[in-house]
Length: 418
Image (tube, rainbow, N blue to C red; front, side, top):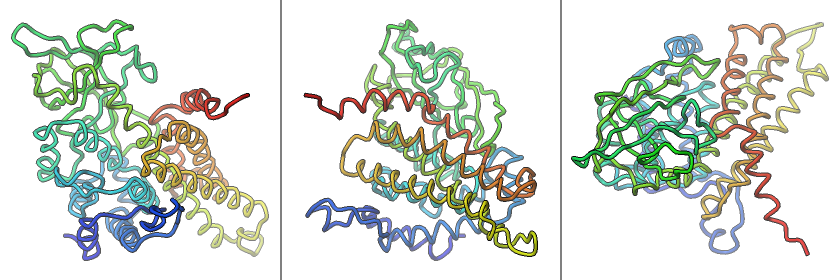
């Protein structure tokens, strides 16, 4: 059942959100940045908090989600019913058009309030790609599938055992047959939500797996199509977001299943990489903030030597270091999101933030464990779980080392030498 505030959120969202850090008048006058929240964004935050308290407020229930490797259907249905799942999608597919800053705010606060991993951010990205690149018929499956359940609609199948950051090493192919159909053959790995979604958004090389072949296409494939199979992958953290290997054995598709133009798949995906990395940072920022919140609350309550440990200079130093990281990360993130809303590239900006931010967020969780002491190294509190989840963000959306490489190539181009 929807709570009243969430229903109001849907009503307000239908009128579209104004940019988080840019007022409409300032945008027209001098592009000034305003970090205050609009009324609609404050309502969004309140609604997210109420949602999180209802479905993720019980720590044992969250631990059960991690053990089951999924978020319960009830929580996913409620997320859909609240309208959160449709944020950022175009109106033509039943979505709620939303600026990048508000989507970043929604992601950060969702992960802060829940204090755990959820499949929603990845689901947002998959639906956005399908809505933007797909035909009207392909995009229509978004609402169609969400009406059946609150689960994500599609999972992106990108990485392969021999091709992660090295996309030219991709070996999976689509081969045209005499009858005009195509068959897909190959393997994808680290596919987030790949065992649960009804559709897979698959990128593979056209015809030849040769390294010099840079023609790749996107295909929309039903997960239950003949020839598709999956195998669960175990990982250190982020257990509520299942990872799988996906195998394609002579999977038949038609031209109607191609998403975007022939051979343009990689260029289409690159278009949204910058925003994806923003959301990875926003997700990590929210989790790191949750760890900081827990550490401060514990330090105020824990008595040692007849006084709360919050009075200990070393504990204060850990909390201060965390706060510096959180504030720097937050300001840098929303600056990147603001630039996206102005139509500017943030290729180097977000590469640097993704590299520094995901490392720094892990340090926040590590410091929180230190504040808890031995208790922080047990499963009795969640900061250890947050630490494990945050370690995965250093790999998601491109490793820190690849981000450093991207930024290192781009920064010299900013400087003009005489």
